[in-house]
Image: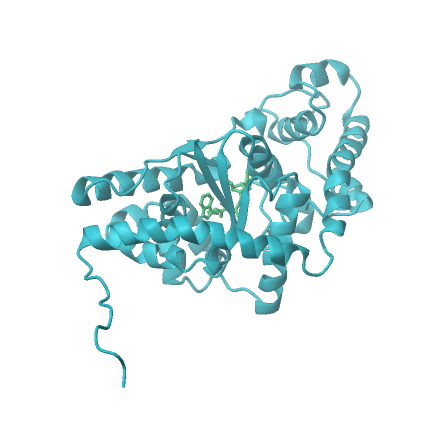
Length: 337
Ligand code: TYM
């Protein structure tokens, strides 16, 4: 059976960008592959976090996986820091990754330009991400378009280490939806930037837990393009094109059919209907999320997820340790006095 791995940072409440770009595909893949879905809390630490908030966001991210339709009896859901092999393999990978490769990562360039203090963790972030994926001998990685470069680096490092040390890792493939299918959902306030949960302006994203009235207000205040025409044209009309993609994914109606239906209707009517479509898409997720908040429920799922994950992670680490020449830890032969 094919193996699938993906991770989501617990750095805030997930957005419809995370859902449409990645998590919806988790729910599809879980029926055809052995899936591992990880809340990557160590990645979140690359930028400042409030400790109490991080703990809460970590559990809520796992709850949102399940509320979105990931079935914990089929897929393995776990927290990255609960399996220390992630950080350990990351070091071994860092020692096989070039400074120049990490320096070229566009996400590092963007994030380091936005933060006053740039940690080395932010710089080596892609090595930890490679470790996440390679630990599980992953075939496929469902992610949004923004992760493509990190996936390519993961493949390069896996091939390099396999060539140098013998077969250690499967070389994974990215599973990225095209833009019209949610691969890159854009900000509601600036359609040239991707929608991001860490944005300072909450009007730029719709969080999966936003109440219906907040969703309506955010969509009403979403920027639009000049003119009145509702047409998919990402070059000329990036804002309306983004809203059309969201509408189409929320309802299953094709973009062409929406263009026809709203020909001459104006932005006001289109936005009002879009808001209702998004409210309806999120309603079952929000309902299930509330049920999962009972104490102990998510903890049990994460405990068994970490047990499953660590078995596979330990096998991979043992293989890499031996291949790279780390001496095995000796067992005591003499009894301790
Ligand atoms: P993160 O937490 O930023 O986002 C989680 C997933 O959501 C996708 N995504 C989007 N897709 C479409 N449109 C958007 N506006 C949008 N915003 C986010 C992301 O592409 C991602 O799939 N580095 C990763 C987390 C990670 C990971 C991994 C992923 C760590 N280790 C191993 C896969 C495999 C990240 O920051 O995702």
